[in-house]
Image 1 (cartoon, rainbow, N blue to C red):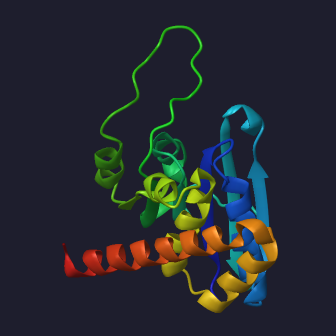
Image 2: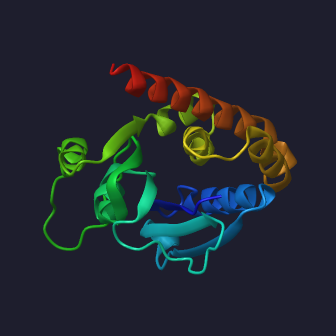
Length: 201
């Protein structure tokens, strides 16, 4: 199994670390070597959170080097720009289509515009995911991370059986049904977007 490099980023409270843990466990379930590291200094206060994850054969370092990430999963638009330089040329960026204003010190600045266009101009493949909106429709905003994982699963060579097995083990039973539904919503979104990309729609 070739080494796959994934970066997940967002802000505190969005479930980045849970998503990273689930992905790591799925890779282990599929018999891959896994290395993971994360930075979440002020995560509890809405600060930036990023998790590096590498899996495959012969994984010796947990850190994804600049320009080598196969996939970046951004739980919020601005974080995609913050960590976009980690993505390899032509790599995939999955972005939750939501804006969270970072904490400001001093003069207020408006939320940046043109983020998708900027990233596409750098040669990346960019897919926007309405994960927060879909989570709201399911009645639980916290399952947005599972929706993003469902989308991500479409682009990784990891079995759906392994994903479901890990989700069933990792998520508390009282929240299991809605999280499984969220993951499936993500899978369906990912499949439809991937098909649209192939068709050139």
